[in-house]
Length: 211
Image 1 (tube, rainbow, N blue to C red):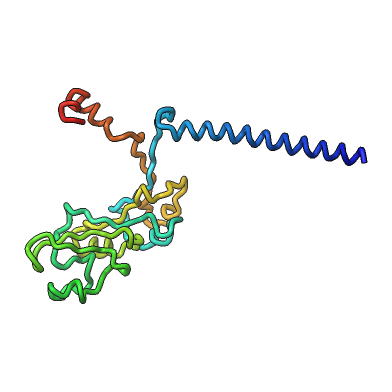
Image 2 (spheres, rainbow, N blue to C red; image 1 turned 90 degrees about the vertical axis):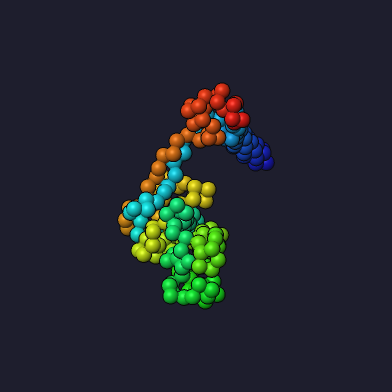
């Protein structure tokens, strides 16, 4: 009976010691993490992002399925400065000979998810149109970018959205990209974008313009 009591006591002390260590480690971790989460105590942080080089990218489609996220953090975008705002867009509709008033109803979409949007800018049905990509539908398949690159103005291309990317140390789509078009880029320390203006114009100029 005495031996059993001694064993129970040792077991209790051992478990108590483990619990104390766990609480101590938890407290240390909390303080460390808390300092980084607190903007007043956190030190300067550097940001690296994974990004796609459009000059190397061939829109092979691997970004759609290679990303650890589902749907992929890769999305198509359209550079409006390069876009010709055509009535029929290569990245939007396959059957280019379709009548202007039939595009939205009968046009065969390039994107299998109908993520490319078309909005009239001016001039009626034969005027100028704004093309954009609905990222809620886009899966990063690259079909619109491929068509625009082959036959259009190359205004459509793929990016990795930093707000969707998990910023893994080793990117799966970078590893499988056949063109080595994905790299990790340094974009500098995080701030609130005021640093440039303070450096360039000075605080007096900022106050003058209400910054």
